Image: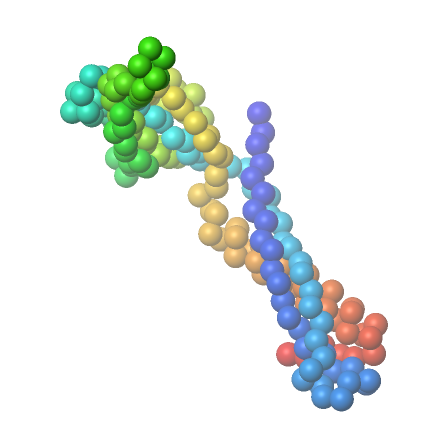
Length: 184
């Protein structure tokens, strides 16, 4: 399975040109929008592992979630995921309400605690094994799987440079067609 990651950089560039029919040269301008695209095979992945616990009290729900969180972190270490690559993305404790038709009121039925962990897998070939491990350790849900490149910053800069070059070429064509030249 070959996945590709496209990094698209959009650039809005205002280019000044001199037109023979303008009163003031600095008032003339050509506005160009261009993009630059760089494709790369991903070499890592990220996902969110969510742990959810329900209990009669907020304290119990939070404690159950904390226990499962530790088990998930231990499982991640065993699969080779470093601690800095498994960080908390969110934590909530909220009441669970249920509508009681006989009284026409919401009734408190307990609490739900959720702990979301953002996991980065640098060895892309092990993504399936890592997901299996977190689910077996207590994660209730795995979501937002994204395939990424460790070279993102360099590739983004390359795409931006390409976008600016494309915009400049289009601006030069437009300025010439209008009888002017592209300024700096």
